[in-house]
Length: 222
Length: 222
DNA sequence: TGTGAACTGTCAGTCGCTGTCACTAACCTG
DNA sequence: CAGGTTAGTGACAGCGACTGACAGTTCACA
Image (tube, rainbow over all chains, first blue to last red; front, side, top):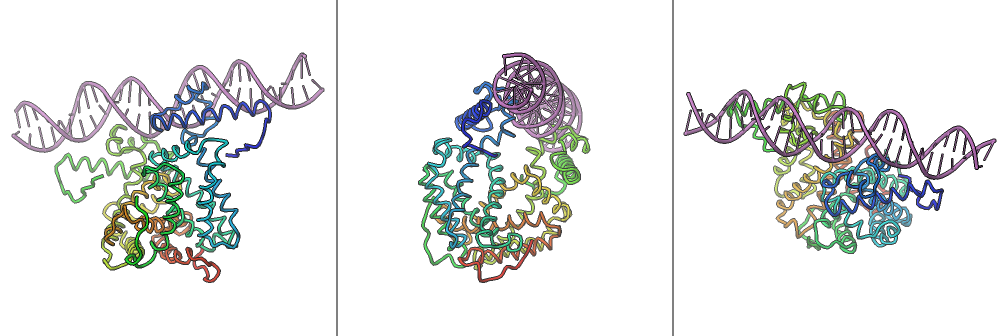
């Protein structure tokens, strides 16, 4: 939750806590990826770290939470990128610019915690595990609300009086989710691939909502 | 799963099965609504119906499934409505027409199974229970895929070669989900209310994706 | 009417998760 | 540095969702 990474050497107790938490996180992710989420018991995780099961549940509210620790960082990274867009930019353009910028800088943003490839694997795990996907989507609605507030703020609008921020964000996020899903099903696991798909799909949002689909030609395949 | 409602009097065994299934379904919904989903144990459900817990799990794969039985019907009702739209109608217009038509005819569509009000209560329960909401959203992505196939078919397109069907459907469903959420948080529980909100929000999808938000005025509040 | 298949109950067991309690290591005070 | 407080931990007991195995009952169909 409140991560407080920059708190350097804040007492022995603190450091010990962070160490066990990180150990649990890493062990869990590796086990999930190698043998699947459902096939991994909490006991297995705690055994490899050599702590009691009770300790695991003191650091993570439930088994799911550990799977979304890195995803949390990525989402905050996007929100930060959106906050950094120039004020004059229209909403959809700003969101588009923010995702693309976020993909471009993801590497450095995560490098201190986890290699990007591990995150990518974790993301595919989430997409392919029904129980995790469900939680992911619910969390996404919370992210949507966060983004909508940001957008409303940028435009100087009252979120509860004007539905356009939520609607624009919903449409945008809907497309992003399709992108993530199709990327997860595809074969190219790279960040480059998902960045390319992001761009291509967002470019299609206008044509897709137009009345006549029979004029312009499609651009991108699966 | 395969519902087969029209199978009339198909043997004593069949009827008995349907009776216990329906009894479990009704008992579960009533308990969920009156005391909450998490606060209701499977044992409670089976006790009121007087069957063993094992029997419950033979009819429903898990506790969640029973909460979505009616939602299943509603979604199929929408898909049917979409299938009935005139062939010439553009995608977005067709989907819009289908939802509205579905709301208008929901009463008769459900009346044989469950009163509409009970469904509305169940829907609000889903929206307000994190665990159920998560599953609902995952199921929604499956519905999206179904709709996208239908849309692609209508337009004579290959779903895997042209991203527009999935994108249009994603944007549309994103807006529908915002609608459902805000309706669930609002005070007017009626079908009329959600129908009105549906219309208003879908009308804002164009303006919301436009570059300049500072010309047109908002229409609907929370 | 009898035989096989379908449906159900009982029981035991796994796994995720929570409450409790006692122990110990880290921090704080004087 | 002695003594008290506090936070992190382990061991254990328990609940609820869910599953597998097996046996008893009930219906379908020849």
